[in-house]
Length: 352
View 1 (cartoon, rainbow, N blue to C red):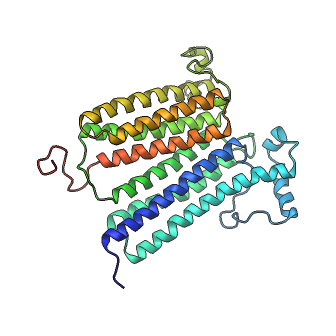
View 2 (cartoon, rainbow, N blue to C red):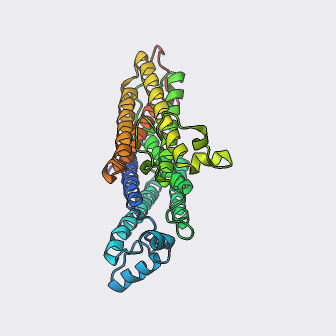
View 3 (tube, helix red, strand yellow):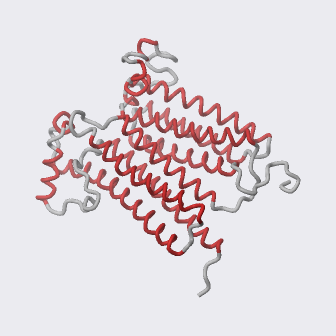
């Protein structure tokens, strides 16, 4: 049998990366549903090897329910919960953890096979091992997040939730970038200014995802449900924004400040995306830049609707999913403008 050509091998590896990225998107959405249904603390133990097996008998279900009954969330929020109701939240968290395990398997074993067959080019091995290491860290961060809600709180720490979601999205972005890098470049690298702003937009989208996770962790979307006004004004008073001491705590713990910063970042992100798209159009590279503006606009509209309707699960998940779509477009756009070894700049006589 004839060995696959280098192009075939690269396309296969790229398809594998895209499949893993799709699994991460699914996990982000399931994670969002797990948070919105208050299901994340339903499993109070971390069993990396055996935790994929759910309770298989009534006695096993009762044992899991008894463990949940020992934590503050049950005692203070769900003391009237029945076993049937517990099973609903348990399945959400179990599915979220199962997806994490599936992603680990879907990445690690094909990766080993590709390494064994020599399909991973030397320059890619370190990058892909780094992604695997970050994925393993993400599992530990997930448990670190859950632990924060098992003793002294009724929900998880917003600090840890935001880090958990942002790390997942950063890993997703790295995989999308890697998949794009494996495509032959059809166009030359973009001008330096366009490249710089494209990378800035990736950073801004990730930053906005982090802020959105803080809003979610503080349930801030349930507290201030008007737009464009927030707490009765366009800009809240200083005393309300900086209620806690020291001042920096307000950016992580004050629900009003966190939501106001999240809104302000949305305006900044949209303006930067529009200005960048206009610049890209002038240079003949406006296609994906315009698509990114459209995605960010839809994302903002979903955010406003989610806020006004007081965070219904469907809208909230659309809002979270659209954030990942916007991140995907931003990463692909930045990669297409990025220079590669041997790539010719725009305006080079050969490239032209």
